Amino acid sequence: MGKLVYSMLTSLDGYVSDTSGGFDWSMPDEELHAYINDVSRAVGTYLLGRRMYQTMVFWETIDDLPGTDATMLEYGRIWREADKIVYSTTLTEVASERTRIERDFDPEAVRLLKESSTYDVEVNGPALAAHALRAGLVDELKVYVCPVIVGGGNAFYPQDVRLDLELLEERRFGNGTVMLHYAVSS
Image (cartoon, rainbow, N blue to C red; front, top):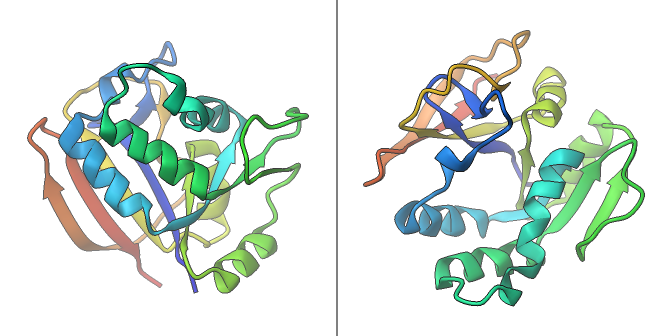
């Protein structure tokens, strides 16, 4: 049975993008990206909202960019090998393999996906993750806290959810990012 993991890079004050929608401050260096590649190998399916999908679909064609480093190329391979479910009421087609669109977030379907999966399922994007958190589906959080305060924007955590957490792992990276890995307590 796979776990549902909510994982993203965030500012120290808890935002995945700033007030103008920018997130260039969260770009991982090679050490952090290599680590993310390693943990991403355990993911069999990504759950994404439309905006997050449109940001991440870049990885589908990363091989076409000249001069791309090996760590980024490796993540592109990991991305292409995983299944992707995009939750959107407006998206009509996808630009990646192994991808399907769902119109509504169905907690029971996600429960069944977790139960039938031999790999983990990762939810990306705070709006979609909020649905999974409210439904009690998230088993773990992997929070990559970047050394920046952006003062506002798109929040990592929903305001109306309380979770009791158990720290499983922490790791510091040379660029100042800290990874915090938590299990959601029952």
